[in-house]
Image 1 (tube, rainbow, N blue to C red):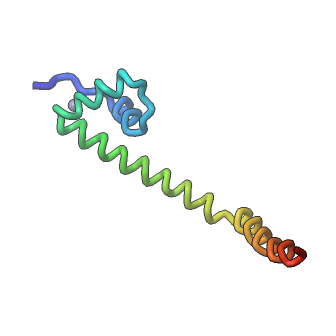
Image 2 (cartoon, rainbow, N blue to C red):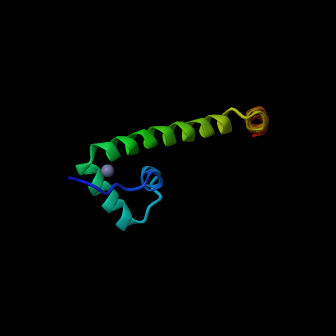
Image 3 (cartoon, helix red, strand yellow):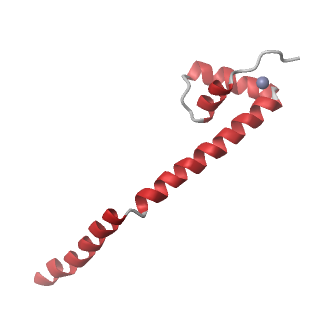
Length: 83
Ligand SMILES: [Zn+2]
């Protein structure tokens, strides 16, 4: 039976891809044998991908970016009509 589990911090870092290769291999090997830790890593991966998605949305919908994009869209027809 497995008696030693990686810490939650280690599992979280593994889920975020922040561990060095040697540690990643060790944690991944443990998760293949340990359903408890595999489920924790799966949960952390969902949490991390959700927060990354939120950040992307905030960047895409920021008002300053939209204004810059709108300005670019308005300018280009004027420049092309000169030619
Ligand atoms: Zn475990």
